Length: 382
Image (cartoon, rainbow, N blue to C red; front, top):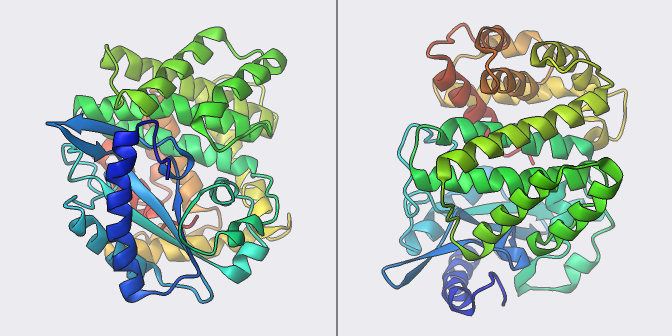
């Protein structure tokens, strides 16, 4: 199997895959097990440390089954897989206050989708990528039966919201984490642009050409394209190594903000360049359309209240009493994203106002935003 651009790394990953498969089939009998994400498209990242190959970030794996598997069970199996690989199994979004360690924060991230849902897939990047991912066990023909998916523009926006959370975590963390998230800022913002304009492709190696073609229509600056090339090379071949990490990190954050602003302004027909005004418009307009593609109706936007109920229950498990989320229909995740945008680009007082829509505890502001964001993010709704 080709998981990376290195044969040596592929050999190491194949050994990991064999261990993971044995643990999964001990508990479940999926129709198909799929290696997903970067490793599932020949673009996984790794470093060589003391002659040992260390895959970075996580293994994203899908179990395709007849009956659904609970999130709790998937998490337990994933944790056992991580331990068997002698990796920590933690997610940095949850443990945002801890210093990043490439071993401790590598995890096996298991997802489940049933055969029934595969026949009527949601318009997600995940499902689009799943169709061309590597089958590591079971029926390879299942993936070919997935219908063509047009990825929702909301997925493009969500990807950039996540980048801002990652930047906030990394800015006071280790140089390696800064480097990883600076690189991902460029590679994922490129993916987001391609999704938004209907030009997305699953392989990192192919996205540069798509971006260059798109730039002829959308006037994307050459500086940005050159930086995406540097980031892509660092991800695929250099173990995220960047010479001047701090400078590259700041550039990545700037460009993610630039692209996010372009998308939101176009998506919601906003004229202003002021983040404060843009977020006001987002709050009044975005919740009415953000979930349309997922719900397959423009009249079911009030259904997002269910997400707030789930968010409230998730908060209780983290000792957060987020009762305010139950008194509004707008999705808490979008409100947190607006607080994060405003915090990231210097509007801290305004960010606090949005956070107060969900909790009265807003100090220290950055830590509160990161915690509330993690509660929403770790539900893994998609």
